[in-house]
Image: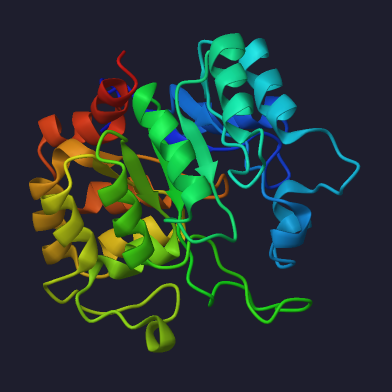
Length: 293
């Protein structure tokens, strides 16, 4: 199916889920992935959910800087990896760091934004507006406080606040391109989503009136990252709805994985029997458009 289609994975990380540079390349080759966005995830240690801090990135406070890990992948194989960066917006030097990454290393996007902070916090808005001024799309990880099973030492773990906080950030930054991602984003594809009841990965038929579709129609600067279990769940829980959704928003959906252990998203996309022109957009065309390539 993908033999004559360029495939760009728009969400992955360096030294992630037990992989190193060699195994990452091997994994990309296995699944016919030509290029990958390789993004640092610079969450402060105190904001990492204990469920996945070590098992996913395998790092401690003494480990190598996560930006350096991503940069190392790009230096070794610039034809396969596309570099991004997102500093903690609450750092008073955040915009200086992002500016240095842009002008020194030529980053192509800001990502992954994943912080225990409301998305419309003014520190975030300042960073997002800088990104709009410099044509850096921003990859947003949104999680309600339902994500981790292991809660200690915090009562709950969350990133971004809510879909409403995300919408307010988009409204405040009309010149910035946002890319929505993660369980808190994709659960809102259904109009009946209630995060107190539905969990991170709700099942069953999708009800019309979901915030994701509403926001895509309202804000042309919003795109979608299909990565992780959440993106696959959104496409597979209601295939009839998914076909209509993908057809309507074909120009703003990005193939992305955020995982190495399966080929589930390609399988979910294949099951929809989409026209080839739509597949080309999802697998690489929209990424190339966003990055001006």
